[in-house]
Length: 235
Image 1 (cartoon, one colour):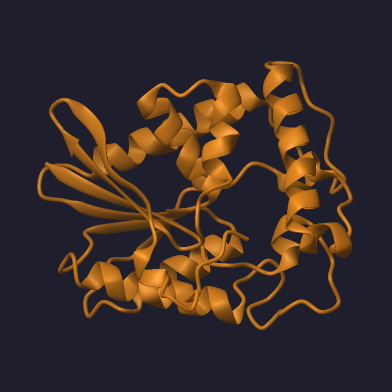
Image 2 (cartoon, helix red, strand yellow):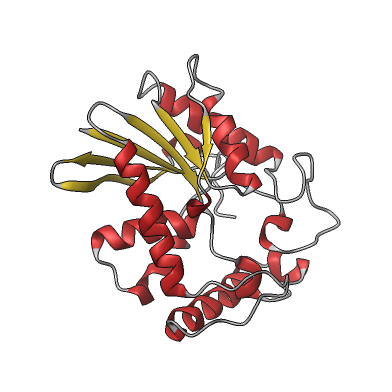
């Protein structure tokens, strides 16, 4: 039996979501972790170091917030594997879904979430129809293409997580929950409801065995919370 720990990236600055905010925390570069995100990654690393002796493999997408979180988690371990990059774990293109979101909209969680939910619903309904390029001019990815990309990345991770192996994967809320939705048979239109609940630097544990991949725990974040609120965030 093998084990996979899926960790969502820590809190990132607004540029990670295509929003330019003059007040943003850019200590880790555009799209990188905030000070809170650094703390979240370290806390998740400490929690995992209390659960497992070491990881035999570690991978993230190529987004800055993902790779920085991976390094923050592994930094709490005495022995660490090489950090590998698999772009299959990247998030869907947020700018393409929320358009030119203003800093005011971004900081209004309700307004931003409504815009994102609207974009996701239209993206899912469009199916194989080639979506329009996002405001950043980046390549468009249809929802079926996104599903297939996540499925393939997950298959690669499961293959690495052979008997006795413990694998760390750092990704994003939409990508992680997309794999869980596939494993649980969640309808496409209900998948976004899972994604919006995922806490920054939360941990989801899966086991890989002869019967396939099974979810043991989902969105675990008790190590980030306390009665004063802790450092638990969703964006």
